[in-house]
Amino acid sequence: MAKPSVSREAFRGLFAFYAAKAHLDHNDVAEGRLLKLFGSSEHIPDGLLELWSSRTELIGSEAVGNIMSPLAHQILDGSAQYSHASDFLHRLLRELDRDDH
Image (spheres, rainbow, N blue to C red):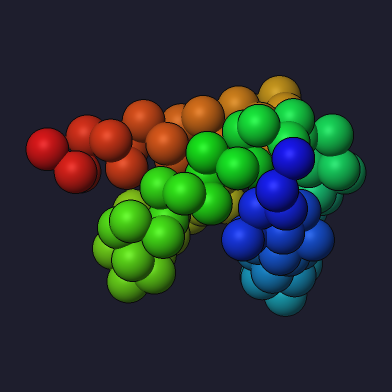
């Protein structure tokens, strides 16, 4: 199986980045939710990471960032909660598919 172009560690870094922001903003609840996603991202299925990698390559990093950032902020403000990092990744993929059409 080919290694995904977006590594698991890079994807985990997304949650660490936003958790650090929540920490600086003294938002302990959001920080806890993001750290939970950080930990669970270690167990995202390889096939899902490969799908994510191929979709991001097709769409481009700017478009992906425009979709990802509001979704991550929803976690920060509490309007969205995910029980596992793969749930968040599935949501991102749905949004990427929606934006692609």
